[in-house]
Amino acid sequence: MAIGIKDKVAILGMGCSKFGERWDASPEDLMVEAYNEAMADAGISPEQLDAAWFSTHMDDVGTGRGGTPMGIALRLPNIGVTRVENFCAGGSEAIRAAVYAVAAGACDIAIALGVEKLKDTGYGGLPVSAVGTYIPQWYPNAVAPANFAQLASAYQRKHNVDPALLKRAIARVSIKSHANGAKNPKAHFRQAVTEEQVLKAPIIAEPLGLYDCAGVSDGAAAVIVTRPDIARSLGKRDLVTFKALQLAVSNGWEMHSNEWDGSYVHTARIAARKAYAEAGIQNPEQEISMTEVHDCFSITELVTMEDLGLSGEGEAVRDFLDGKFDADGAIPCQIDGGLKCFGHPIGASGIRMLYEMYLQLQGRAGPRQLKDPKVGLTHNLGGQPSQNVCSVSIVGREGA
Image (cartoon, rainbow, N blue to C red; front, side, top):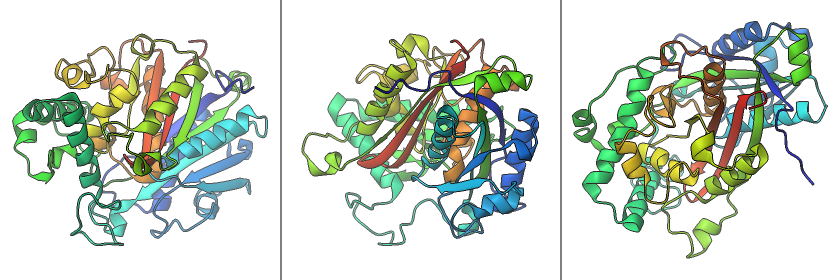
């Protein structure tokens, strides 16, 4: 019987590049930026790394296929480097591989790194090359805003939410993230916005407006993991350890049955339930200090709070309007700005989420530092609401 990974693996060091329109940097430059910070934070030399996992989604921007681009860019000491890709959850998949390798005893110290250079591709966030941009919104390969707008419509119908109230709630999601991102020097978007700005912005896919959609960003992030005893032998204190890592992948049920109503993400609920069991968490609302979730669109964050059991069914609208997930709320969410404002370079996002949890748990988050957080949760979604992968990770102070 599986016994899980709780407290078996610690974070030795982390690094993250500045996210944004990084015309000044190549993918290799961004990798080096994140890697150098992570290695300095860990206080180790390259020769101490045993294995590496490399996450990137778009393979035609200089990074190429396989693991060699990471090995060459960082001049790694001929260790194994494995490229992973799982839609937008690729960064979390790289973390999972590195953590499992350490927990299994296959290596002592491992690194996971994700990078994406979306701006170099000309990718605007909307087109789908296979079928063009003028397609019905119900088409399985519809553009992302259309797919997630349907999530909003289904949620509104199921819970009988007034459309104007739902728009105000998802606007509050964006307002919160912009306020948080304004305090983060590495974030892509650092401007606070008002409710009026959000509600009057151009509509992208009803009810989602311009400020409800994550931008197209470049960036990289890295994490180095090891066993707690090794971390302590290297002089580390106040360790941040993994409590759970769970991944759930759609099997097509959502699209091939009449049971799914489109108002939630099925795999997120499965991954969350398994992660809570692995971490020994019985009351998420009381035991989770903070979250970083996959807010590719503002409605996704709202629905995710219910998928994670941090809001009751149909209660997330009121919870957001009441400030439950604000920086000074009961369970702060996207304290670094989230995908919405920190940015969403696909291969790096899952690791970037962990980066904020790590900084917060070590009291190193600067002006956005929360008061005494103990346990953090990251939620990384890949694909669309009906066909996706979902990773839920829980980290916290050792022994928490």
